[in-house]
Length: 560
Image (tube, rainbow, N blue to C red):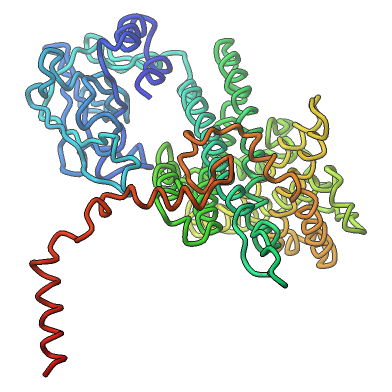
């Protein structure tokens, strides 16, 4: 985030000065925003940057314990510089949070500079995981920096101490967020598909029950209970891959528009990327844990690769925006969009479906038999109608409050559900759009169509209460969707291994004895067990001191 922050918020002069130093590793930067007392509420940050016109400097200060910077990666031991977010104060007036480039450590001996306290915050969740990252704590005691180290692309402070806003909208900063969040969605696809690859391969190797007359037991992968938990995750891995590719295109499109001075789509893009970050990271964290459970007791072993994968991934649900807070941001955009319907300003991008609100509020599903749910149009309209009706219902309920913010707070749980419905619609629609492109390879399209249907119908089944309560489908149509879903599991089963092999992960990358490409699971499990340091000795440490006397005492008592 250090480099993207300078590129997004720094002037041309600042970029020319600082970016080459960072690229050449002549300085090592980190991004110091989160504090001990504030994370999601950025406007509540307490660190101050007070301008001193006598010296043309900013005074960076941590006025309270809770103003300590807390969590920035690379801060604890490595970083020499930081982008520090602090409250800008000039002429006694607080102008809100701005970014400042601050040197933290000497470039000669790496010791902290005077009046700076910096260190590591300690061990974190998991055995290894993020404990290799030096997340840090940072405090300032009236540290002075030159005025030109304030990031001044959007706003500046003059030599006389006047605060000046440039003609560049603050929304320009959204570009950096879009970049970061699209990479997070791509990471979600990678992490989930790794877990699914391990669980699918192991489920094909593992056999339990069903043996008759000395025959083979049944492969765990053949049980519908296993398929109904695993195959939706397999479909999600592909779905997140495709929506991640689309977000990469979206970032390029937004960047080009920003350079041309077009900021019209930024609010919608911000909401879209915030929502997808929340949706995909939550689903991936839950999915990795589900894959561990799908591997039974062996999945709990570190050698399965799944505990470490979960521990490494789960922080994604919190960093770069708490997932619930991000969904509430999406909900605000949905409410604003609904309030502007009929104003002559049509919704754009992923909210464009709201432009057909009258139809979506009144239409009903035309599905009559199970395979009707294989029609992408039928599925897409179902998700559009659900999202639109849930958002409109929330908007109506909020409007009944005299104070709209009180209404928003009171109905926040409902608003989160409406935002989830909107984000799931985005993923479904982008999966369907992917199928409309040229797809090479024999039978590939057929398998992707099946995965798209599994992803969509699993969500419909999981959230059928939404679809039923909004009166878009009937209980009979919900039952037909579940019938089709079971049929799809049977259809995808013969190609399940090929579909995870297509991720092209090496055994070394997976780091799992359960997910080996050659299926040689049990010998490797046995071999891995003997590598444990506890097996370096036959008699455990402390036996003669503690265990042997206890055993002797028991023997003595037994003789008596």
